[in-house]
Structure formats: C-alpha cells, structure tokens
Image 1 (cartoon, helix red, strand yellow):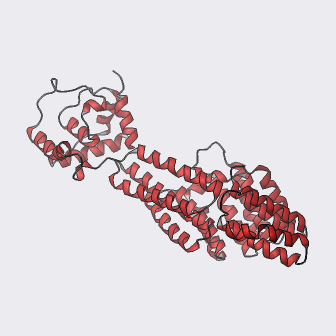
Image 2 (image 1 turned 30 degrees about the vertical axis):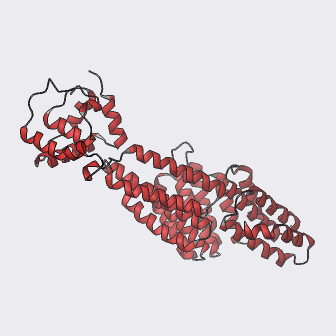
Image 3 (image 1 turned 135 degrees about the vertical axis):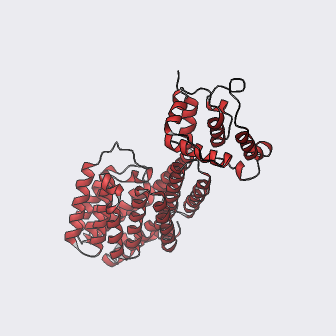
Length: 417
C-alpha cells in the first residue's frame, strides 16, 4: 500500500491541507447534488495514504470537481470496470455542472483556472526580483509601476483561489507588492503617492492577517512621516510596528522597529528616549537568529544597517563625531550590492565630517557616493541629501576653493541624474 504522491503534490500546489480538501469536496457535493457532503479529514488521509485506491461515487465526483480533472490524473486507478453503479441523480447533476467545461473550456465561470500555490510562488519570486532591483538602484517610477502591476495580479488571482490558505497568501503578496510601490515613492520623494499606497497596503495586510506585512507598512509609514517632518506620527507608526505580532516573535523585526523609534525621538531632540530605543534595537538584534527564514525585503537590515541608523540618530542629536564613527562602522560591513544604502551612508559620513570642519575630506566622501551610483539616476532621497550637503558646504566654507570645485564638478550631475 503506497502513498498517493500525485494527490499529495496536487494538494500542495493548491495549498490544501487535509481539512481544507475535505471542506472543498463537501462544497463540491453540495453544488452537484444539492445535499451536504460528509467527507472527513479521515477520508482524505485514506486517499493520500493509498488505503483508498479506487474512489467511487460521491468521493470520485467531488475529487474530479475540486481538481477539475479525471481521478486517473490524481494518481488513482481507473474505476471504469471495477466501480459499482453510481447514484443516477449524482451522475446527472455532475454531468450538468461540468458540461460547460468539457464542451467549451474557454467560457463560463466554471472554466476559470483554479489558482494554487504555483501562482503564489511565481509572484513571490517576482517580489524578490523587485526587492533586489530596489536595493541596487533605489526607488523609481518603473519600479513603482511594476510593483503595482504585481499587486493587481495578486488581488485578481485571489478571487479564484483554490483554498483560503492560497487566498490569504495572495492578499499578503498584494500587500507586500503595494508596500514596495510605496517604498519606491518614498525613496523617490513622491510623498503623496507613497501615503496612498501605504493606506492600501495596510488594508490588504489586515485582510491577509499578515503581521509581517503590517510591520513593513508601519516601518515605511514611520519613514514617510520623518520625510514630511511629522515626527509625532513617525514615533506612533514605529511604536505600532513594535506592537505587531511579527516584532514580538522575531527580534530582528523588533530591532528595526526600535531603531525607527530612536530616529523619531531624535528628530524631536529627545536624546534620552532616542538612545534608550537604540539600546533596545541593539539588544534585540543580538538575540536575532540570522538563519531564521525571512522575506527578502528585510534583507537590508542587520548590524551594518543598524550602525547607519545609529549615525542618523547621532547626527540629529548634534553629535557629529559619534555619527562619523557609526557611519564608518556601517560602511565597513554594508554589502557591496546595496549601492543605494552605501551611497546614502557615505553622504551622511560627509555631513558629519563637514560639521567637524573637515571640508576637503567631506567633499571627497560625497564624490565616492556619486561614483557608487554611476550609470543609474540618483534616487530622490539621495538627491535631497546631496542638496542639503551643498547648502551646508557653502554655509561652512563659502569661499573655500574646494567648495567651488565640488559645485563645478557635481552640480549638473546632482540636479539632472
């Protein structure tokens, strides 16, 4: 007696567990016969284990309706000669229900393709590819459009999901794709569009009951609030991220939420709560297991990124020497492929150097940031940071030759790239 590996694989593809398949089969029997089915999880276990090799009657009809194929394609032995006669009412009802599929496979609601885990995995791979593009190049309009297209496909597919599990995973992907679109807008400084996308992402994350997506949205909301100088809202958003189930279960997510809270407090000039939140972030990160499976979007976060966020906190609190030291720590371990993150950390390092009177060194450091992003347009956040550096440069050293040389060399590239 061997396991029915074909049936198990089809169930996995559609996201069915035993209870879910039993429910789907009972729903199919109700549609076919008008009477509730009595398929149980035990029935399904027998089908999977091979104890039932030739499902007949109502069981066969339900299987063929749920999977939209003959039982021979589900790993079962044909019942053409061995099966006892079926209920004539059942046969007439089943034939009437499936006639449209057999005669005209391209028409009618019964012909809709069942959406399963293969669609979820395909969309998940697409999400990973967008994340990789963002981490290298930064946010831009094409990335936003691609993310919104992915979200639209996920939401459209969930209407024909084979199970509640598949439906929730598609809604979760819709939330993550929309959050990626929002993040692209934040990085490109398209702040009003970012807010609209975040509201939609949070709605979908709630329907999907996905705490990781919820944390991601609150994290981006905190960043958006910081850019809009709405610091109280930023602290509230980062504290909402701390309160998610994802942050309570995984110290990696908790660390990110505390680091974001530290930036909110520092933006308000509150040094004690800012440094306290940084301490919480460091303690949580020390507990995080790097081998725990996590979605690709959080891949940017670790000791290097926490050091970069620490530099922001010290810069906001008026401690440029501490900010410079933290930026050096970040650059020592930030992965080379995170070009946008490395470039922004270099500009923060340059700002810290400039505030300590190291004008020539600061100008040279920003040159490295331009070199890192060569070949791609500068993301809006990076352009804004370089603009701030330019203004600070001429405030600190308005007549210095190195300042004029910096302006001559980079002004055009900064404004047009």
